[in-house]
Image 1 (cartoon, each protein chain N blue to C red):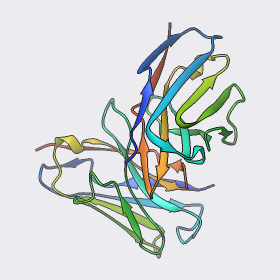
Image 2: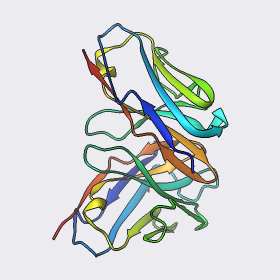
Image 3: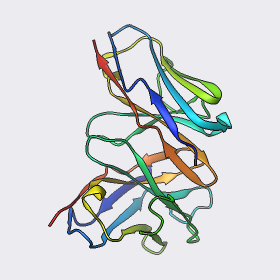
Length: 108
Length: 118
């Protein structure tokens, strides 16, 4: 089973800044199976990125994904106030789904 | 637009079985393109995939929960269900049902909080 480790646990930035969130896997897998979600308080997660780089329908283009192998990144180019929530990466493999522990983006 | 709604008891006693049902509306559960799944989130913590079921009844479970989990489907009611046996306080969580694609989950239900307590 692949373990996903997200870093940092909490990221403190200001609106307008660039955010870089990391997701590292315990073993290499196809980038096709790496997904990012955004979760606002009291809500279910929202799909942001799938296949490591493809934005889901309706996701602003300030969100972008990159990476391959064991290292993946979610970048938010210019932070808006509504972006200061929690982000999870998720991996699919061998009929199993695993999530990272999450990164909380907070206002500095 | 596909919608999912969880239902079931909000309070379960330790050692008993947690049972939840997910009702799918706006689309048929009888679709070979995806799965139907359960994910949970303990208060203040991260997400944990529980398992998926295909419309045919084929199931896939998280190995860490496999011995206690049963997911079933009722295509006539457009519903699928979760049973988690021998629960403890560690099973207290918001339980989400969802449509599961390969590799992502969308859409999600709104979630239902289940508390394990005597």
